[in-house]
Amino acid sequence: MQRIVAIIVFLSQVLTSFTLGAVNRKVIDIDYGGADVTQPAVTEWLTLAGGDQGDYVIVKGATCSEPETTAALELQKYIRLISGITLELTQDTARVRDKEILVGLTNREPQGGIADRAALGEEGFRIQVASGKLFITGGGPRGTLYGVYDFLEQCLGCRWFTPGMEKVPQSAQVDIDARLDYSEKPVFEYRYQDWNCTFDEAWRAKQKINEGTSSPQYGGPVFYANGCHSMSSLLPDSYFETHPEYFSYREDKGARTLDQRCLTNPDVLAIVIQNVRKALLASPNARIVSITQNDNGGYCQCEHCKAMDAMYGGPSGTNIWFVNRVAEALEDEFPSVRFDTFAYQYTRTPPKNIVPRDNVIVRLCSIECCFSHPLEECGVARIRSENRLDKFPFIELDSPAARRAHVESAFAKDIRGWSAICKNLYVWDYTTNFMMYLNIFANLQVLQPNMQFFAENNVKGVFEEGNAASVSGEFGELRAYVIAKLLWDPTARVEPLIDEFLAGYYGEAAAPFIKEYIDTITSKTLKTSQHIYIFQWEYEGLYFTPGERKHIDALWDKAEANAGSAQQLANIRRSRLSWRTYKANLLVDEFSPLNLAGRLKENEKLYNDIVGSGITYMTLGGPISTEPNFWMRPVEWMSD
Ligand SMILES: [Zn+2]
Ligand SMILES: [Zn+2]
Image 1 (cartoon, rainbow, N blue to C red):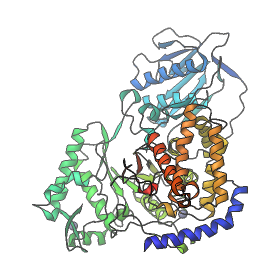
Image 2 (cartoon, rainbow, N blue to C red; image 1 turned 90 degrees about the vertical axis):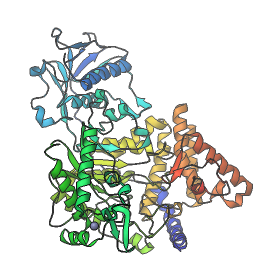
Image 3 (cartoon, helix red, strand yellow; image 1 turned 90 degrees about the horizontal axis):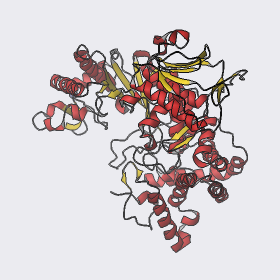
């Protein structure tokens, strides 16, 4: 039945597309968000290297930390890559010279650098020219490392698009503004994303992503002592046989189930406290421990839990009561640790008559939301259905009327509610279609407004979940780059970031064609009132007229013809897989059944290109099949 409804919805979009198609092509003006910043003109230059007055030396503290050493070495390396000149690297115990670049905490600091270290925090930095010297100084060691990377980007023009692709300008002389002086510090204390291309500590450090950079040279720290959805490890299923009362009672089943734990059972609390303690002792550098519900909706409905739910405004209140007790029991022994829990699905709504303790983190999750419109504005959501036995139990198709109605954002209400009662509010947000990673997913226009919305609501940490499973056949690398910048500065202007990424990753000459493609799919998404979700069937997507498809094919052809290098051509072909897969799933053009035998060959070619480009997962549901049936569409090419 749902398939039939879906096809009707799809056909209604086809008709809308025909009427809007002609308009889309002519005017494409997408606002990708962020504020314009105009830099004042430089009136006086300072030459660090390659001038006729002698080169600067890099000076670090004699007893400096490992991240400060990394910072000094990276500065030396990139100035060499820019100019061919290797600046001397020395320590502050050496004689004082006129032309010095001071990296981190040194004994030259009275002449310049940071006046108020505490105000910058561990990860903030100041970059300043004073007394003819350049100071790159962090509030803490990690701030110095971020300061060097920021200086290389903002002042010398370096870019790190992906771990394997960087841009280093070439210049025989290295000049900077002689009046340079700026400070930055992060809005979010916790910054993380898991797009597959970001699994590289060195790249993360360059992008100032602080989770997943725990090696000493990048300054740590370890954030989480354990993984998420941790209740099944904090109170294992193995107790069920002897103590079914520890587990969630389900009214619909009339029985205890393994789904969740009975949080009002005192033994459950005691066992969880014991196991949280064990996890912290096993991970002495961790700053956070996770006490989070399993990934299902089966919370306990026993009479005690129901009574507590009623007292505290729902299951989120009972969950906060439970996590507060754990945090209280362990706070003296672990004063620097915070105790993390979810506001996820059945616990997303803020509780009443109870607030999280000061050492509790609440991670609010946007899993149900629409991702083509800003979270603050669009309330259309896809609610998890527990009754579906699919591999993906999230699907509940909204009606065509719901797609076009304005619905107030329940997520916005929830974030404001949590913000009012929670000292440490984090967000877990989503940036791909997990059911089909290769689907068109036009969300670049919401990344900035959403990040700014989090910041405005006093969110302290953000995790952006992407396709971690394998390399992207879509725009994962672009998204990861933009997300990294927004995690540091939620007001960053996105369009220039997109433009510089496209030019670097695909080639200067190819970039305009790919930009037009991105603008086209984004415009189509917005103009046909498409809400997009992270679990969405391929047939719920966009419909392009044959003329529009021909135009898009030509854009990709032109992009390929204008690739700058073999690597850039490979990048274009890999990102094009999303468009080809879209057509194959919708059985159009070269993938049309009317193309008889040709279609099988096209499917086989597409499959070989997907696998050949290193993609191993097309969906969260499992790896790509090694024996695909080319009579079937790409959505069917996954292993069971
Ligand atoms: Zn219970
Ligand atoms: Zn929407």
